[in-house]
Amino acid sequence: MTPSIVFTVDTEPDDQWAPPLPDGTLPPFTFANTRGLGALRDFFRERGAPVTWMTSYSIARDPESARLLRGCARDGDEIAGHLHGWETPPFADVDRSARPFIGEYDAEMRMAKHRSLLAAHEDAFDARPVSYRAGRWGVDALELQHLAELGYTIDSSIPPGIDFRDRYGLHQAGPDFRAHLAAAPVPHRAGPLWEVPASIAPVGFLGRAIGMARVAARRDERSGAARALSGALAATGLQELIWVRPLKHPREKLVRATRALLRRGAPVINVMFHSSEAFAGTSPLSRTQEEVEHLHGDLDAILAAARAQGAVPRTLRDAVAEFAVSLPGGATPAA
Image (tube, rainbow, N blue to C red; front, top):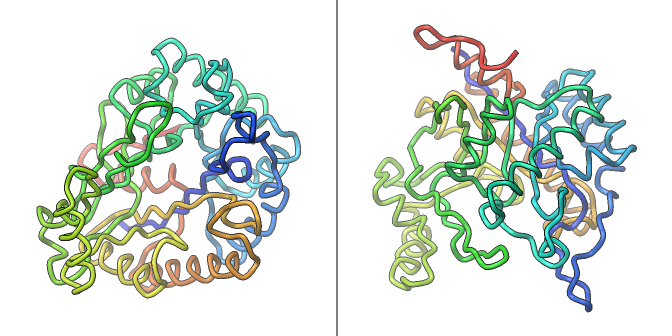
């Protein structure tokens, strides 16, 4: 089996984390970043790397965004699903002023929002997505059940080792993924779905000591000692979690983590970022063109490091298919 490098781009409106307006409502959705998505498409085309566009409801319903993404699909990219509850009808009252985690809606509302997302995809792209990533990494057992019922075959909603409990939706704290950390994460079955984690590597002298990595990953507001230990380990180089995600860490660390995961046998390097980060002024991470160019440099460095160790650029759907057929009795996970 040849390992894959996958670029999964959360494709969504501008500045999704901007603060509420003075009247307490969320800002209206704007689409400057997807108007400029052609430049990002061309960047990947020039490097022979397909993209998996994790596409939200508003993007699928915006005619110009959908037109550009249809062209991407014709060129071999994958259009996948990405649900922001506050962005997707039917709307709850809280959607005007908050960005709830999916688990803060009741089961009926959750499924109704998913059906709206699928209808938008069918209208815009004449196809249903088979891959999915949850907005705000909001995934739980019910969400996986819903995804399977709706025909998805691949989920990519787990960033191993990361604890989001210091972030809130309406009232609920975010999910905790520390228990999912592994030296070389691989696609695995979650019921009828394939789960493909975001690529995060414990690196440093203790990089293989997963129990210690879980401690280092802790961002528990109840434990100052845990935070101090995490910082001390990172500062000494003994242990650090590196998320293979442009603009997240210094470039040399992104390269180091990519190499480490492939050396440890990871079959998929899953690189995520947001479409807004690739267009100046639409994300807090890339307010200037210089920062966008830095993102491009990070992507180039990650891709070069992966290719040097034999990884092949693929869509998420094709990467899982490559992995699945390498297993005893393996079968293609998606039509």
